[in-house]
Length: 129
Image (cartoon, rainbow, N blue to C red; front, top):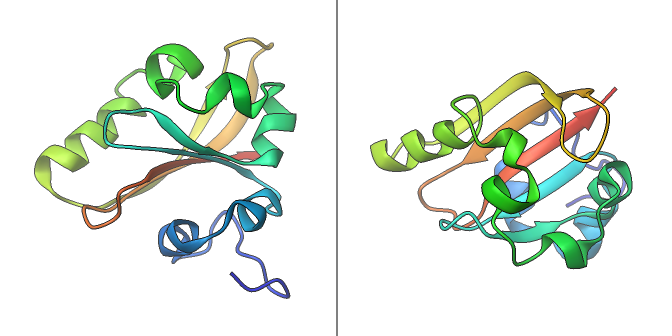
């Protein structure tokens, strides 16, 4: 990633940039990053998302995203879209308005759902107002 021009939530090539980013580069972003593997287990969790959600990386990394970490995303709007994209072998890049509800009062956010068959990590990118 370029430190002078860090990617934004709406950067077109964001998936490729995230897949190549170091932990320090992810932590420098001003939006939340939750990366997870094909089994739904969280493998990346940046500092911005940790602060905003109030969850330490130790409580998130290595745990299933949709059943343990964020069951409020285990629905047709989020989790199912990743499953469908994988089953169809098609990339996913969708931005949706969403309300996070777990462990906090409801918070309106934008989620960007990113997946490509050739990239091992899938991403939920979180932009808070």
